[in-house]
Length: 124
Length: 223
Image (cartoon, rainbow over the protein chains, first blue to last red):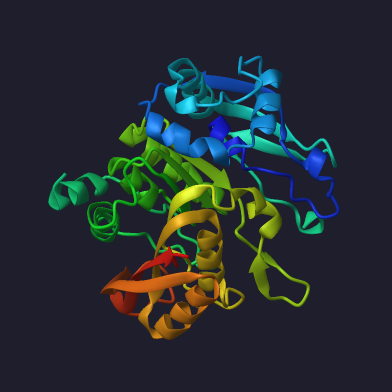
């Protein structure tokens, strides 16, 4: 799973309702892998407004990945920024480990790069 | 890429190893997948350079097809671990350059009165994050699955900014068109297909059954 996808996942356990803690899910004991992908600037610029930057920044910090605090004013003309963005959201893969909710403590396992978001019946 | 070659490539995608009846796991054929994605890209420009989501992705046939057609990012979601493992094998085999992410999750949840509803808590942050959604949903013909096809379609509409490609029994066409309208989408029937469901389960008496299926394209009404 790439970080662009992690940026869309929130805890959905019943009674876990604090929006500030449900998202982003915190990575725990994760193994990362870089996989090279073709860079498409037009795509990156289009995706940018759909990314929750604060959440991505928080996650990047946890993983010791460098990312600017703020999105530059004209990202389309900022090759260096786009290059970083591409590497962080599209080339950084989480292979194994888990994602933990800071609200309720639920742990979502990641196996072979696939996060398991299924919940037990009493958690729905 | 020529359609014939595209279909030939997709012929290497492995189908469900042990299909589960309750999940209505019927594989999407290479023939069908190639035509859906070929049309989506060449007629509508909905795939190349786009963010695509595949709901009920199963073994990843449509996700891989989207990748080959040039999708910049694909997310496949399925409830079944075994199917996702096969999907991952397929993805590794096709060397998609890490473009496809798989998520094990349930699009629907069972309500207290035994009916199905959208798992909105899960999909909340996926709202309008994709350009295009593609899906071959369960048709909702098994007990307990009533309405699941429409719920998958509704989830797909919520996640996409532009278009949704889906397959539905021709017998439900009027209902699907009405539903689409209520979500702010127009619905075009692109093709009426004969869905060849080969004998996979013990309850199938015939060698294969043809079911009338519509390939539909839903798109947001402008304005």
